[in-house]
Length: 203
Image 1: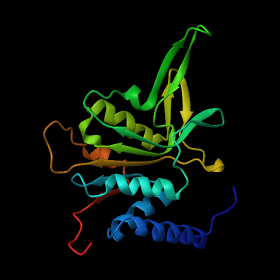
Image 2: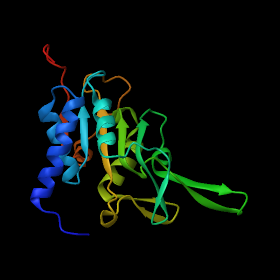
Image 3: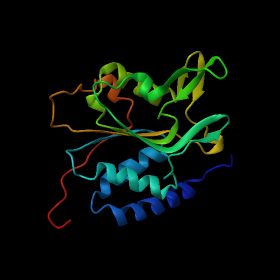
Image 4: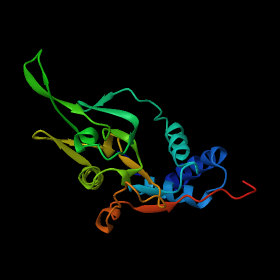
């Protein structure tokens, strides 16, 4: 992979930021933090009440990066989607995110069923509604950028081939009933914690 200069990064940032601002009104600082995290190989926790464009930001970013495809495509024999969205709920299990082994009666053996973490951009919606065990499974994958299914380790990113893994998680900071707040140790898995405010009157 060729070397990337500061000027190249600056140009990429400026191009994406300019196009995002055409879709998202206001939130200039918030968009800046999200893009910095993406370029710095980090993850972002978006906090805000429903209806403040958290999901819209993710969808716009996915489209700008030409990742708006959901079918599986293979890289180094591992399938990935352009982006995935997981709605976190109390009954969501780690295998629903990571994947698991399933028995294939045709080959009479177990084979991996890959979960939604096998993607470029993962929208983890309302992450604080999942039980701590499920939260930990995702946060560990975010930290290590790999997961284990059965006894096999699968990489979630391959920078030499342009494959990255970027998580945008959301949570409502106001609603507490039926939620499982992320402990400080797990919050450290996120490079940025961005508060998405209500839009101003003029916006």
